Amino acid sequence: MTNNPEIKIHASFLPHTDPEASVAFYRDLLGFEIRLDVGYEGMRWITVGPPGQPDTSIVLTPPAVDPGLTDDERRTIGEMMAKGTYATLVLQSDDLDGLFERLQATDAEVIQEPMDQPYGIRDCAFRDPAGNHIRINQAS
Image (tube, rainbow, N blue to C red; front, side):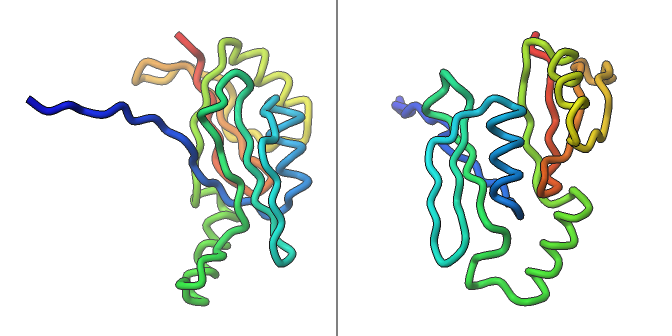
């Protein structure tokens, strides 16, 4: 018999291209807490997370900073970010329609209005300031 340890999601990473716009989106629009804001050599890593969930964080990172990346890989990452195909985050809200209206009233880029999906969820989608695809599901 195996004793399986508990595993939790602690942090996930999303690239950002404008620290101030990212803070405005995640803190001011989505209501996340800023947990850490670290600068190094003109770059910033910003850790955000939902209130009441201190063990779950998103680290907003400068894109393509890994020294092992080639120039072609950096260029590809930039192109994918511009198209919104590089990174995706799926969130959940107990008031999808209300949150959609609040986000739509800002300059957030709408990808999809709230709709019932054939696979059983209701969701909508936006892009954050860096172009990341943000999907929001209605909580059951």
